[in-house]
Image (cartoon, each protein chain N blue to C red):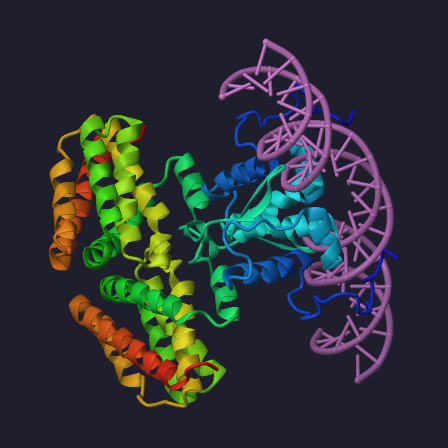
Length: 252
Length: 252
DNA sequence: GTGGCGGGTATAGTCAGACAAATATGATAA
DNA sequence: TTATCATATTTGTCTGACTATACCCGCCAC
């Protein structure tokens, strides 16, 4: 009976989905998605390690390592006798790249997207201002290259979207503030979904390039206030577009 | 030979330090501190699991679970054959509460503290403005209670400092923005160290209460702009105090 | 000489089963 | 009613084996 796996591996239970190399990683991902999507509510107690690992057809060690990952991200808390329970949302590391990815894995709520935009609106204009003061030539060049690429490929291609994210990333990086830079994953997530929603709504209304170039020009010209305003405008417009696109797609 | 542990347990190697309940947690803490303090540089390869766990007198599973925790926080990356290596600082989850705690465990660099303040300066005034628009009565009451407690106990006591952090936490919470709220741990860390440095410098120059009350009054009066300005001033003054205190304590 | 290919090997990854520690719960006694 | 204690359940830790992966190096063809 035991020793299923090895090669082709038959059917047994789900957990196909195949994917990310490490087993503990994919278990963590599965459970993580189940948690952030509300399938397991905060306060809920997960079934005990033996049953859970048995049901997933994995060893207890692999399952435990997955739980450690989730615990490290604040999603669950384990204690002897009590078991492992889903933590209150206030403890979740919502800005962690993986947690964020799990969120967007199962259609994030509109409210959540809105909150992310609000964060962007607070952080990015300020970051642009700092970047205008501190950016070096290499960073400036990377921003320029990213925008050129973005203009070339348009946001319809994966490469174009990556360039967009690259631009915003580099702005954060140019602040020279490491903690601030770690927010790039969160902001990147918001950026990505702006595009996805816009695409879905088949809107493609506005050309995003002028806004982006204005931000770039201000940073290149070392004008903090101008950079702040340009970025603020960019984010506002992006939010408007996203909202409009969502309104056009009630419930997919 | 084996089966050391169990009860009293002899001496063997270090890892006294005793402390935090779970073994994997304390291993993660030890390694985490070693990493953020620069003892293990990014790119360095940790020694293999067998040797490492042997040296720490723990089982390989416990050690592996610790590594999973560090990997979940972006501090290390493991791959077969290559081993486990310290990730580049850009990947570290600098805003994670535990990572932050590990940072402050071994005297954070002044530059890092400065960056944290810069983040505070970006986030907290904006948060105060949002809080002024959205706070509910319960939150307002908690802010008030925190300030009263803070005034009573002064920042010389642990209770007083906790009240200070409570105040700032509640402001973040009152924004109703969950991702924003997760920054409270980072801001809390900055707040805590403001106090520690001030204490150490035996400065205690300025009374922090007036600034805090002004923020509270603006939020209570539902005046966003006023709240933003008051919070901005509070943070600026806190930074000044901290800087002055540091200047007075060159190298402890 | 140069470039691609394949096997050897060190390392993390996974597995299985046992025992230890902690702690909520209910039974028992004062 | 309250305090104490036994017990059962669950996570925590340990051991040792086997598997899978990917880097490195030497071989071969060109």
